[in-house]
Image (cartoon, rainbow, N blue to C red):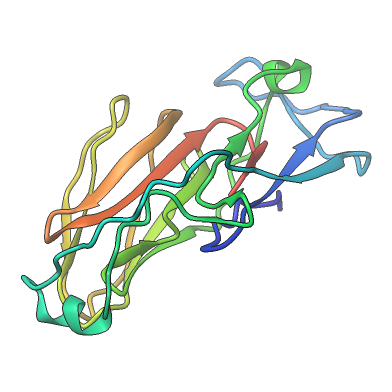
Length: 203
């Protein structure tokens, strides 16, 4: 498995997979590119995304329309900028071009990544997946939610998820950065999902 981006409430650590050697005997007939096969000579880069300047003040969120959300959040505020020790959370880092990326296709992971309605917020707030990799949405709250992505290049959908409902599992067929996802029940509840062709991303 390739490393994943873990958006944290305090810090974000960027981990990139960098290809330093490759042998790709397979062929992807749909893209006319060779399917990349890992060699064991891949490298890993790590670092931190930092924030400079004054951090904008978080705004208070009115959750009174849903008593369940209000009870679970004593002093709810926006999470547009989450910074601690100059480190910025909720950041997606990905490789956009390069010889290996340009000349190869990549197997799609069958394992679903999870986005959760928890405490009347999306967790994680930012998520990166490969094209056609399943996204599983779970409602862990004692209230109804709905999940409503509004992509530009993929099909839009909007599905309700009552308390105790089974997970929603969806895929997106086309690459697209930062697809906004919102909950129409709770307008403050937002997240962003990016779909990439390659596994060279941090989640």
